[in-house]
Length: 388
Ligand code: CAA
Image 1 (cartoon, helix red, strand yellow):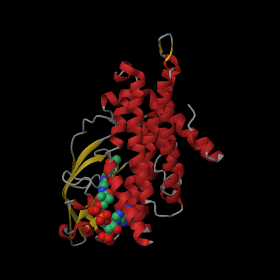
Image 2 (image 1 turned 30 degrees about the vertical axis):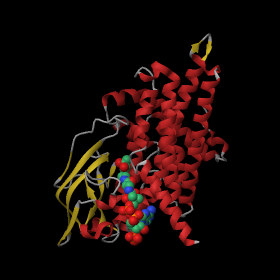
Image 3 (image 1 turned 180 degrees about the vertical axis):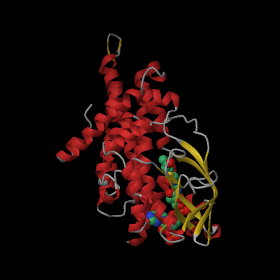
Image 4 (image 1 turned 90 degrees about the vertical axis):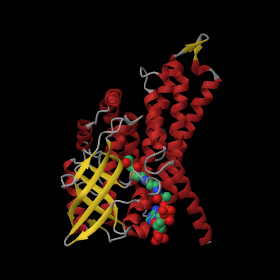
């Protein structure tokens, strides 16, 4: 099925980019998505192939080995990949999430040192913010950072870390003084081989099962001072700015999942016959398909609008949260409706829609729950009011 981005004035180059991503997703990812899901198998070969096609490190500048896309164009690519498999898309997109703090807060030398080797080699990076005791309350984290001579020493545990265990480098948020709350948080780059860094088991998740989600532990991990990104205490602001940038990309994963569900459900509705006619000829099914398509389009537009603001260097905190919130909740509803259209068959692993429904659930949880997105939006509304 044709996604309606084509009618939003995409240049030939953008259409070509989407086609490359679509071909990769439909020919290489989709055929093995169910198998990866079943086995909880990390898609290392697909990621390598995605990197060689220029479909990773999307918003990292070309001079540092990235693809150098705008946020808008990155979203076009991500939607296509996610329509093949959201777990694969998450595994690929997390590189941008983990490298963005360095792009946002690092010096030119640090960008060369920490972005370039990962982006140019097809390496993997992980973003370590969440902890067992601090999820939504990111400012309440407790992993500690101490300065000892010329070194930084990290101690603590990070939870739900995507690409943990398979990453070559970790972007870690830790506190120099917990009593300072968010003002004590710092951002540090840690190579995977650092002594004292260890990872837990691959979590047995409901959806997006092929993406590697683990606990990462830091036991007196020592890195040089040059691995500190930004100033001491600037880490929280760097993390929040990073999430502003990454949430539209995450929203695109949700749009891709929902688009895949709609495509399957529409095809099924024309093939499945009941009462002597295709179920798609009944108004109740038509109304479901129409609503699904309309809500997908609305989420896509929010995603492209928030990414366009980022591309203009404008603040997009509220719009990024709107896109992430709406797209995540929309994907949950659309995939649930797709299962409903398939009826009993949709509830089995013989058809693709139950996986999409399981994959969609994570969209409402990671990179800030739908509840946290609403909090960001509401706070921004109040802040705007007080500026008037
Ligand atoms: N940009 C820059 N600075 C920002 C900011 C932004 N978008 N948002 C807040 N700040 C600043 C504030 O201005 C404030 O600064 P001052 O102290 O100088 O005034 C400071 O940060 C604290 O702000 P808040 O009072 O708003 O902070 P808070 O503690 O109330 O929490 C929050 C804010 C929005 C709830 C935040 O904690 C949050 O986003 N939580 C969700 C965390 C999250 O998304 N985690 C996802 C992990 S990554 C993941 O899941 C990915 C994966 O593996 C795939």
